[in-house]
Each structure stands twice: as structure tokens, then as C-alpha cells.
Length: 84
Image (tube, rainbow, N blue to C red):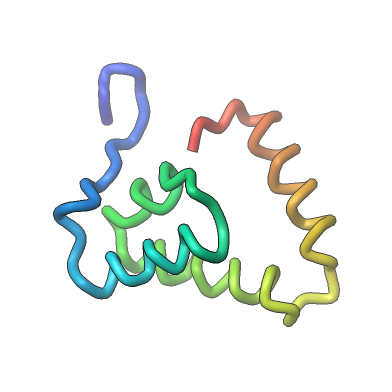
């Protein structure tokens, strides 16, 4: 944890090849903001679980429209003062 109470991010240049490839997909298919990805990259098991959930929601497997889920995600982040 840093002096502001935030979890440290992994460094892009230190990512193993598999995570670097996944980060490129993140940039291409999701966001240019990599705070969340690089924070979770420090715990690859957590990143894998979250990636599966993201694929389910945004990949069409869920009965919740991706647009509605995005609104919920933004609202929850705002309510929790999430910086990631």
C-alpha cells in the first residue's frame, strides 16, 4: 500500500508475456485507463476471475445489457470513491 492507502500497480514493463498480451486486449477492447488492470495484475488469480466476469457481462452471456452494467459499474465506483 502506498502513502495514500492505495494498492500499488504492477509495472507494465515487468508483466509476464501472458499478462502483457492480456493488457493489449484490455487496451483494444475496454479502456486506455489501465489502473484497474495493473492493480489486479499483482494478483493474477484475482485478475483471471475478474476477466471471466467481464467476459460474461460484456461478451453477451449475461441477461443484463452491457450498457446497463456499465452504468452500474460507474455508479458503484463513484459511490465508493474508487480511483481504480
